[in-house]
Amino acid sequence: MRKPLSRNYLVARKMLVGAADPAGLKMQYEVDGNCVMSDIRPLNHRQGHVSLCSTGFIADVVEDAAHAGLAGLEQHIGLLREINLKHLKPVYAKDHFRIDVTRVPHVSQNDIRKLRIRLVNPRDQICVEGTCQLYCLSKAQFERMFPNHPIPSELRHYLPG
Image (cartoon, rainbow, N blue to C red; front, side, top):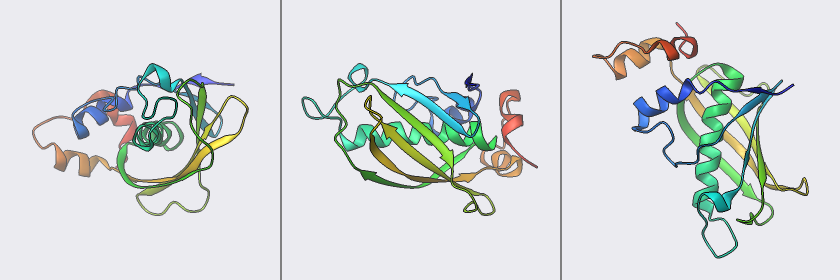
C-alpha cells in the first residue's frame, strides 16, 4: 500500500545545499513497503536533445530520488557520496517514467547507506539502473555544521544520537 513520503527531509536539503529542491523537479514520492517511488514526465521539466533526456537531467532525478529514499527507507538525512549509473535504454523526454529506490541489503556500513535506483519506462523496461551511496548525518554532525541554528523540529526524526 503506497503512502506519501513526508516532505520534512527537504528542510535539511535546503539547509545543506541552499535549496529544498535544487534541480526544481517538484517530485512527489510514495513509500510502498521497502521501496520509495515517484513518477516523472521529463518533458515537464527539461530535456537535452530534441527527444532524449540528457545524462545531467537523469543525474538530477537520481540524486533527488536518493535523498527521498534515504529519508523514506532509512529515516535519515545525509550527503551524497557516490553515484554509479548504467544507461540501458534511451530516456525519451515525452515518456512518463517511474523511479524506484530500494535498499541494497548487507552493504550499508557505519554511517554510509547504499541504495539501488531504477528508472523504468512505460513498457516496464529498465532504462537506467545503478546505486547511490549516501553519508548519513548524526545530530552532533548537524549541530557542528550549523552551530548558530537549533535543529528544526521537522528534522529531529531523521538525526540519530
